[in-house]
Amino acid sequence: MSEKIIIALVVIVSLAAHYWLYRWVKFKIDEGVILKCLEDAKAASGQGQLDSPSIARQTQMKPQRIAQVCRQSPRIQSSPGAEETWKLS
Image 1: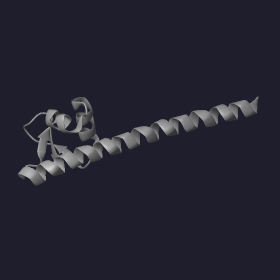
Image 2 (image 1 turned 60 degrees about the vertical axis):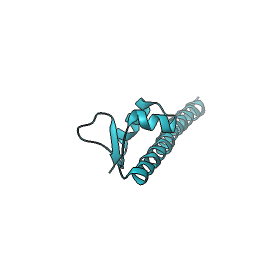
Image 3 (image 1 turned 180 degrees about the vertical axis):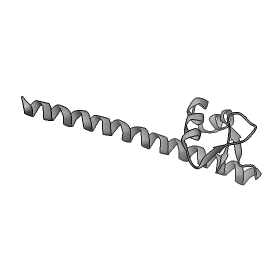
């Protein structure tokens, strides 16, 4: 009986770790794509800020996901006075 409990705990812990790792990697990939988009905008026009719909058109990501990633990223900050507009930190 105790072997089954130990196996169940190991399975639960490994699934939780896998889920956390998956979400972290997905965040880092999305963050990298958004950072690249903002860097390209800065290089092209000298203006390093874009709004979520503009980033969405260039990256094929949903605007809600872009806003979520930008809020969580320490390398991206919100532009003051403009809603859902992001720039490099």
